[in-house]
Image (cartoon, rainbow, N blue to C red; front, side, top):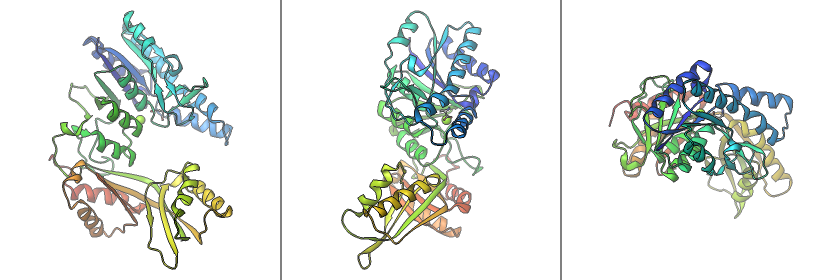
Amino acid sequence: MPVLVMKFGGTSVANPDRIRRAAKRVGVEVAKGYDVIVIVSAMSGKTNELVGWVNETSPLYDAREYDAVVSSGENVTAGLMALTLQEMDIPARSWQGWQVPVKTTSAHASARIEDIPPANIEAKFAEGMRVAVVAGFQGISPEGRITTLGRGGSDTTAVAFAAAFKAERCDIYTDVDGVYTTDPRISSKARKLDKIAFEEMLELASLGAKVLQTRSVELAMRYKVKLRVLSSFEEQSDDAGTLVCDEEEVMENRPVSGIAYSRDEAKMTLLSVADRPGIAAAIFGPLSEAGINVDMIIQNIAEDGRTDMTFSCPVDQVKRAEKAMENAKESGEINYHNLVADTDVAKVSAVGIGMRSQSGVAATMFKTLSDEGINIKVIATSEIKISVLIDRKYMELAVQALHDAFELEKQA
Ligand code: ASP
Ligand code: MG
């Protein structure tokens, strides 16, 4: 029988009543003849609560125990979902990650899935089980310890199962009815997209759109998993939501498809570093070892053999970045005059595969921001995106103005 993967996010399984609604959706697909793999998140708010308890108990926690604790929310919803389906006379059982097994790396709290042998679940389908309910977000390391995949990781569990079981589709049920041109809470003109290309979704996710974990989009792109984002709160037709697919399937033809933002950025500048071969490596090596997610980088023109180096990173990593730079200075690897952190910045990005062939996007973006009196602090571009760092207080304004400028409220 064809396999379908259905993933339910935290708000869709927030209480027994919501779980019943989600289970009804599963029942509809089972009735169509699918064997269904249901991936569940923890009840909304649960993972945050568990993380809080870990931090309260042990500020310098053992990451293996962190994973043991924070993975537990999904165990509860997996069991409840299986019970609910059984109540509906649908043969179902729950699986924790290690039981499948979902084999991952040992990078606790940000493990990667390496393999999902389908044999155990397939054997149960062969015996007449119709739904395998799997706890998302978790797996088992080569050492036999429980791992988690990073926040939002059950999206990645879902896509990985869809790839491993060659599922017809992977449906991600969430609290929004699809992927929007921007966050509807910021621009009332935001429009739901029927389709979006993998590459665009990948950029939007990594630039701050929170609908899908970035890694899940990477996997879907690599294994050509048909991925759909839709709401679990509405009656759904077969073409509801947003399909994330190959760019050939996307009909819209416009330079920009969406505006993403990330509120919590910081801009750090090393003043007066020696301009010599190897200096960038000497700076960004230690930052990478310290686990800093450096995003944008600019190196200024040198004067008298000294230059300024600016980079951006998430605001909660500033302290660690400062420490890494101080250590590198003390050990003589680098030499700089001063390290200045600007923690009141946000990143706003325009994304679209149409940028590859249509020019003038950057010009429109900069003109729009300048018309609003917004100063650009750092610019970074790729083939299909342009990102700027601006003062955080102008973030909403920038998103709205860019959404208007690129006329994203209109279907192209
Ligand atoms: N429950 C986990 C989290 O909140 C994983 C997920 O829901 O995707 O990050
Ligand atoms: Mg999520």
